[in-house]
Image 1 (cartoon, rainbow, N blue to C red):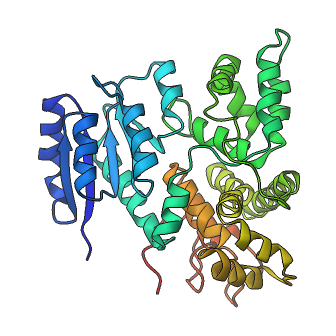
Image 2: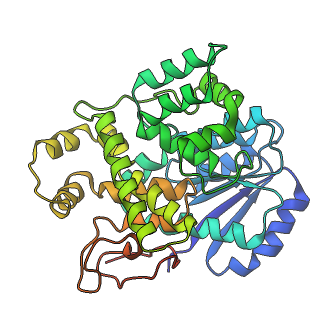
Length: 371
């Protein structure tokens, strides 16, 4: 079994010593290194490849946001996680782009290990290093430039309301995904399991939304959408699938949390398409030119053209961003295959192709390599 390399960065020697001591239980699986600062960390990364970097936020000379921005630019395959007890809004907003996940100190050892293991397991979804670089290098999803323009106009409007902001965000699926990512993470210490833009905006507040707009970390389009990719159609399709998924879940009597996960998985199942299409425009145009009668045929062509399916890319992004395991697995398992044990499409049976059905609410470990 290949050993994974994990790098911890913190300017507090006692904390690094504590991590070194408590994580000995993982020494048979991980090769761990510990750096006292950002510059030292980049020096280590210049000599060898790391799979995950976990950094403190506030450090002298080079803070966590600056370090992870350099890691994203120079080592996009490396997962980037912040582990910090310093959570002032300005610093967090600056770190939103380069950071894939945020963990707050104090952090339980089991949670830290679980997050790292889940990130490492995602490599089995997308094995091609070039695709890992493409997806790992994302700091802002491709989106129409009009989104940022509209949000900035609202930020300057003293009569702007939450409803005005929600209306702009809901028009674009990639912006919706980024806002839901923030509100369901530990970035702002808000309640998890938020699946609507209205609730997300209400929790974040207008001040935070405006700060994110001004900084450009969420709403600004850093790469344009490729020709032929209709963001409105993508949003409508995602909302339709998400709504149907939640209807199935509610009809089966799922708990509210599980039904929420079903909705998120359905809504975000194609969130990887803009990234793949922008990163591989020729493959995207070839895919557009094909008339494909069903999801399985489309899945096969995606694998051939992109090197992975759209749902695999979507699951990879959602997993690195810290969406729940059930959401990631549900997306990764698409397109679902109907079997005798599952006579109609049911979100509770969204797992890897060919696997046995699972019961509502069941959780399993992140998927390993499927050969």
